[in-house]
Amino acid sequence: MKKGLLILMAAMLSMSMAACGNNTDDAASGTNAPAAESTAAADAASADPAATDSAPQATLAVEGAADEVDMGKVEGTELKEATSEDNALESSGEIGNFKVSIEDAKVFDYEGSKVIAISYEFESNNSTPTSFDSIMTTEVTQDGNALAPIVVIGVEGLNTNSAMEQVEAGNKVTLQKTFILRDEQTDVNVVVHKYEEPEGASVSKAFSLQ
Image 1: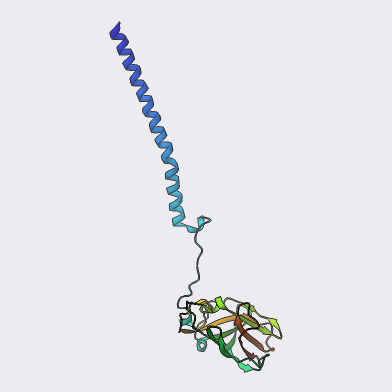
Image 2: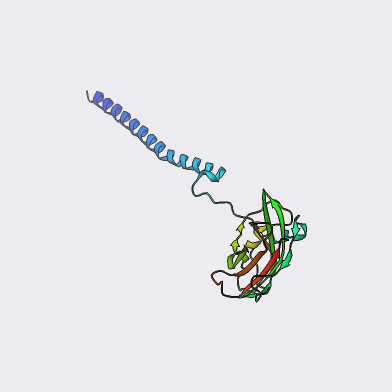
């Protein structure tokens, strides 16, 4: 009788341990499942960064952009200098820790619009690397009306990213900016000054379309 009870108890204990083992395996399986999903999601995000909201955005390649600037290679009509709207301003000069010179301008056709490309020389004497666009404002107008800037791609000798290139102290670059013309007769007036300092030091130059 005692032997029978012992055998029965041993059998029940074995069944209980087997059940516990199954539960442990299930729990371990449930714990690992989210990790596997997270890994898969990470792999998918790595393969396709656009699949996640936090994916890094593409950045503009500006390093070395000024090296591509060559107004001589831009196919278009070179403009002659005209009388600036402010005769007291020179076409080049010092603006704070920088020297700015408005150089040349050309008009060309781009995607159904007449576009003017203007080149500038920018020299920095700032203690930290600085780009033209980060410190200067360019006002380009026809008969007092501002011209809309435009991004031009694929034109030889032209790279408007050059205005965003960082310039070290003591260095200078030639850069370009492009704008859509309002008409093909009115002179284009260009003024450059520091941001939020319209009454401060400025340089100006005008170009004739005639």
